[in-house]
Picture 1 (tube, helix red, strand yellow):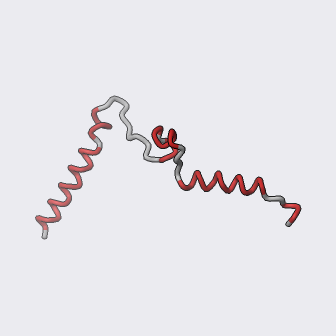
Picture 2 (cartoon, helix red, strand yellow; picture 1 turned 30 degrees about the horizontal axis):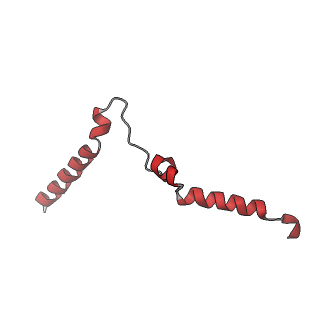
Picture 3 (cartoon, one colour; picture 1 turned 180 degrees about the horizontal axis):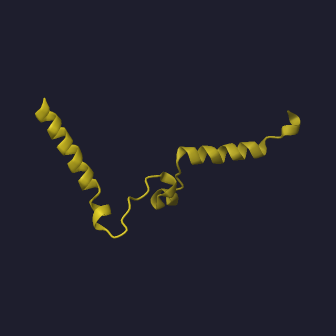
Length: 70
């Protein structure tokens, strides 16, 4: 049981180290943003995140809504 826990901890530590190699070795290295609206490839295709798209659509609907008719 203890041996398997140590192996799991070792694998998790190794994966974290391997994922952060670019950040560690590159001067002023950072992880690239994983947010869709900040991805250049997705921006070119006109794809945004669900929250951003929902906000835009709600703004459009609010502008179309005529509060005097309510």
